[in-house]
Image (cartoon, rainbow, N blue to C red; front, side, top):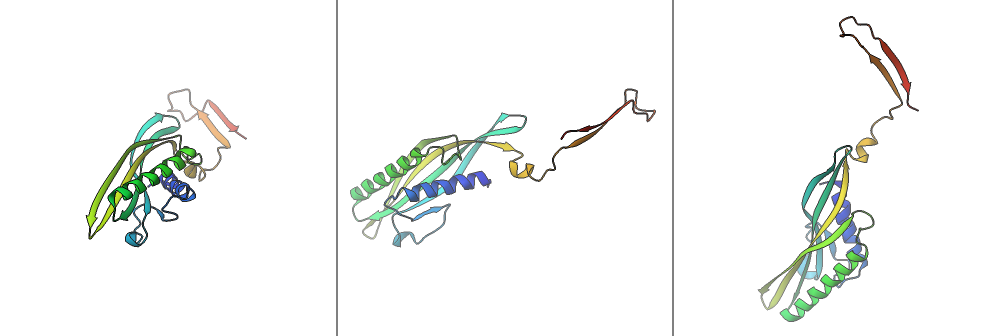
Length: 180
């Protein structure tokens, strides 16, 4: 998983926690498993599929569209009340993310793709999971800046050019170019 995807996911977790939804600080990245039943409502944030297309060739720039799945889990004995609570939390999440739609300059664009709700009854309780899929668009260069930091600066070039057929081992043009 790329560092940028991890940064985006962690930024979404941070924004949702700051939004003070009904889930409070019970917001986790990935599929970490808090004791769901004891700590509901709970929110998980996952980076799912990502489509990648080449945007420019030199330096390689890629347009990446990341699917972010935000799942809200909750339970109640009343399905109508539970449905209303999930809708309220979903509205809070969308408001918080669109208030900072670049996720603190980590992405270029954020859109909602879909919302899905599943209910399941168990022992007098109704459990529900509301899943919101966001599309986060960002651009990434390859090689990354982390790679470029490992390279030495290009300060000098020793240039030799043979105008003949190359069999005589005589360079007809030579120069040492200082790039600083």
